[in-house]
Length: 364
Image (tube, rainbow, N blue to C red; front, side, top):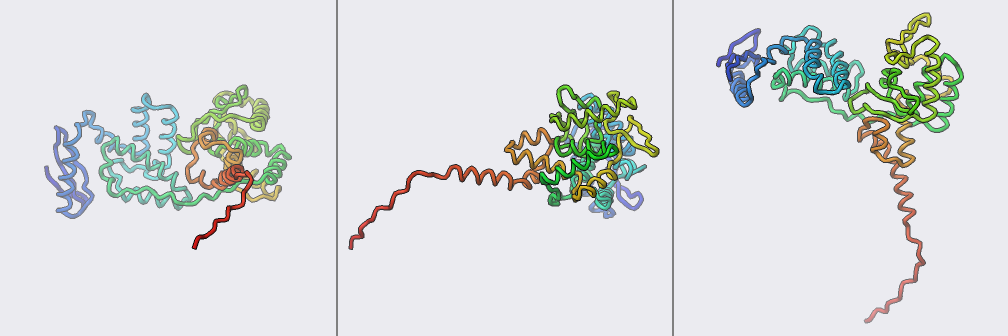
């Protein structure tokens, strides 16, 4: 067991349970290096040796390669949706870390990633989810011990900014959206958002194999988190909008099971059903402007949540239809249930005849 300096930092070189470990200790102080080396050796002695020498093989990979290797190793043990989730979360990680090897990633890199993603407008929940995938890779590579004391997820204390559209706003919105054929995709997307509770990413990822218009069901295979995977029911408004979209897709032979319900649109009306649509932002903004409404597309999902809670549906039913809804989000709509509880309290108000209190003579 020994320590040595390399590129200004101390490293350890120790053999434990027949395996040799040469690892950076992340310090320039010799006494601190000796302490960290002793703690690391204790950790290594307490666990069984790694016969596959996973740390060495995974440590030499980039994140893109490590994600694919991890997927191939674990795919028989998890669902196809989890495999898709790992790959999706790995894309922004691979784009940021590029050619940096897993073994060379430091706590400072994680802080840089958090700051870069925050600056690009990503939510804390999204960033924490991406780094959760990286944490899985590092744990699998036996490298997470370096980050235990330094890594802190981003606090997710940002208050919800969504609002529910009023009935009048919804009526104007959908009346406007139906008025032009070129807004069909935006209209259908808005219908699925307001009357089925789908997120924009879930709508974009829909393929025709996920749509069952006979049973009026959807199979959500891609969502913001695995908690969003579900099979929500379709009401008549959603089913009719999807049927109209399917009729249009049949005209261009774009209804194969693997084709996207919302296909990619290029210039000169070029449509590629093998790729998902990137955005309906232009049409959505035009609809809002003509209807005289200010709203985000995600507010349609808030409207769906509000409607279900107003009608007294319990939380577990709301979450089964909408997918994962955070406690903070449900708390946002607590006033709806408070109104119902106030009505319940009023209904329980006793109404039996009141009697005058008996006069009690005070004895001197």
